[in-house]
Image 1 (tube, rainbow, N blue to C red):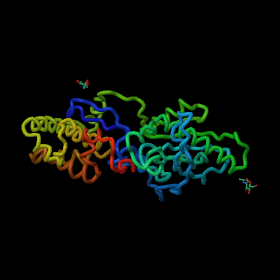
Image 2 (image 1 turned 60 degrees about the horizontal axis):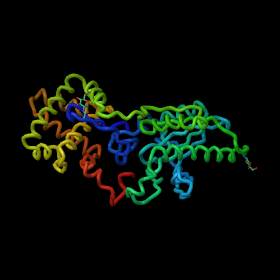
Image 3 (image 1 turned 90 degrees about the vertical axis):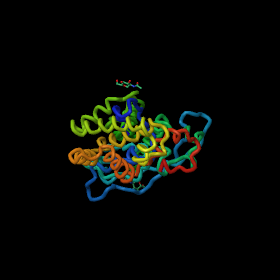
Image 4 (image 1 turned 30 degrees about the vertical axis):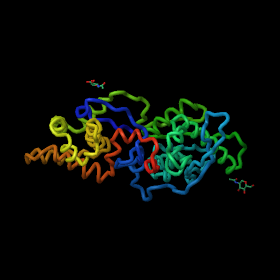
Length: 340
Ligand SMILES: *[C@@H]1O[C@H](CO)[C@@H](O)[C@H](O)[C@H]1NC(C)=O
Ligand SMILES: *[C@@H]1O[C@H](CO)[C@@H](O)[C@H](O)[C@H]1NC(C)=O
């Protein structure tokens, strides 16, 4: 996920990484891109979308709770020419896992003759142990449980390969785990926790360090924006702060966010809109209109409001309510759509 980091100059406060925001394609539901998209210019977006299932233990840490749930996974063996060749375990993170993307991992799997497998993370997509996400049901959702899911899956799949290749139980292929962002953290942790189950781990942008008041993130946003766009954003921050003091309702309404009662929530929305745009490599979507407005002497705040409403909310499908701290206190959701 990398992060929902706030724009410090806007906020003057910081935010921890929220690893469980709603419905994120690779970690980021409303993000424009998923990890799978990044390099998938190949003919087909997926190596396979054919679902497989295994029965997974709900609670790996209870000796008495024997409940199971169905975990979805995908496998691709076309490159596995040598049955003793490597197995690449692509860790699916906090989103629905709908197949094995045909991306950089497919390229290196082909090069190394690797089998590729990917299990879906518990509670996402079709691997939810419960229909309803009450607080009580959510207590088995943790990265610790997810790591043990991966270990169980790894053993299960090794045995499956052994029987498929008519080998004695106990044969071990060389396994490598891969992950990006949250699943990057899982990838690193998996290697630390189960060194006997992997030969190596790739942790790309692994979020292994939670930083309180992570202003460095915002500094990077400013740097990525470049001096002019950064100056425009800082000016907007100053103006919005001022308008919040004078007439908070109308400035929130201008951004289509008058449902946010808390000023901090509103500022986080505004900050995250900018941060997201830079983080996912679309600086022009924001900086071009700001630069044009500056040249023509138009209102920067209104230009930014258009960007937030038309691009961040409408185009990327972000919901304003997901920035509302009251929303986070809702512990009995009446639907589970945020996890789909
Ligand atoms: C966050 O860090 C900044 C910069 O170091 C500091 O000015 C600010 O007071 C900090 N805020 C909190 C809430 O700790
Ligand atoms: C494994 O054994 C079965 C049954 O003896 C046979 O049909 C199958 O072709 C064998 N598979 C391999 C990969 O050798």
